[in-house]
Image (cartoon, rainbow over all chains, first blue to last red; front, side, top):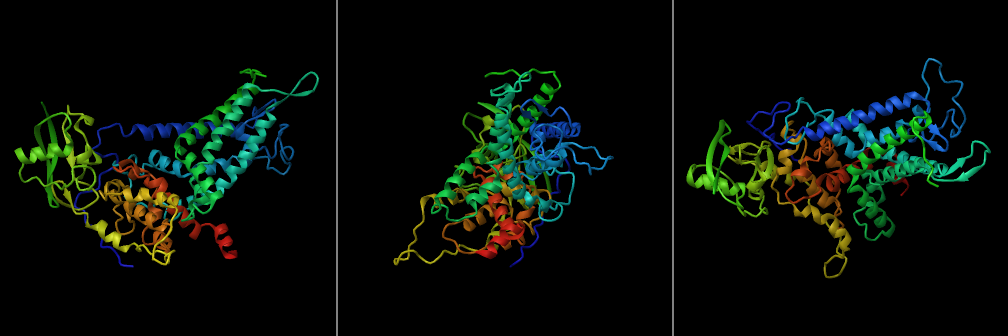
Length: 270
Length: 245
């Protein structure tokens, strides 16, 4: 392969924040920084609480699926005895890494936090703080290529979260113990969470590739073509769904938490 | 008629400076019109590359108020004219003079990419049959007018100057048009991962934002190529499945 000669550019590289742009280029990365920082801070705090994460038939999505824990939603029983006493325990610790990994390695979020949190670059045509750049071509960011494996897990989580919505349709009468069908505001909150997380996850670039994008000739593969069209539809609004689902999953935890703490009342609609 | 001031870069590879020119502007004018007017009235030696004045030749790429743009497609009424409008050459390529840069590196890069190699013809008359769906998928990439604004704004080239390691968004789009073509049989994935440096792209989407043809460069070309490279190099499951095929 013939090598291209290095390009000699006389003009110096602009320094960090230097640009001829006149618009408020810093506004978008700043908003992304605030949004991500708020979500990460809240979710870390919520994960460490280990309580007030369930209320009646509702289970906070930050704790779902509850593999081991003290609530009736736990799939495999309470906190294990072998868990080291000096380590804090929360059911969220066992599962939250998977959706977090999905978002951290997501193609949309990558571009967003490289700009907002690493200034690489801060914004388009704006100077950077560092002269060296490895990109995703070598360690550590080459690890981002693991994204499709987190996508598999994210799709599995959607199944659990849908099951949680089903559970949120069945309310137990505290006095009689009779379980009956119903819909509360919390049911709608958890259902909307699945809709938004589904819209985000099903628009994943890796999924788009795997269901059909990897083929040069999709037309002759009707199933792949339909899937590819469907995922492409979600993919066109991937950024929108990324933010809406992030905000709503945070709100869902807030809703369940405040209901569990007795601060908010969950109104029954049906 | 009103007037506006344009702060235009004047100089060559040895050095230069911005110079202010005030000229009359009227409704419907674009930046290139103003530059031509200045060239005619005040700076006959001002170097500017242009051709079609219709956003189709990709010649008049420059940076207007810091944003990579085609001068012929940037209307003056989209700019704040109460302060000088800065016009400077693209920063990612060697400056020849004033607003003209040497973009020949791009053409050298294109030569390094494996050419289209179609499969054997489908019909005895030497023609092929391709479904319209598959045609349309790569058709978007063929809208490129090679204005090189995407190359200009890409920070891998602009700020890190990795011209010898990364082919840039324009040529990732070009590669995608070939690699995803329904008839093509060649394989460019090893080149993409190694010599062409697709891994250097960190998905800032600046290329997509500046594209005057509104090609969805990142989502439809670069990321699908990255995913194909993942198939080939980083996904053990796909590798294993390939062994059983």
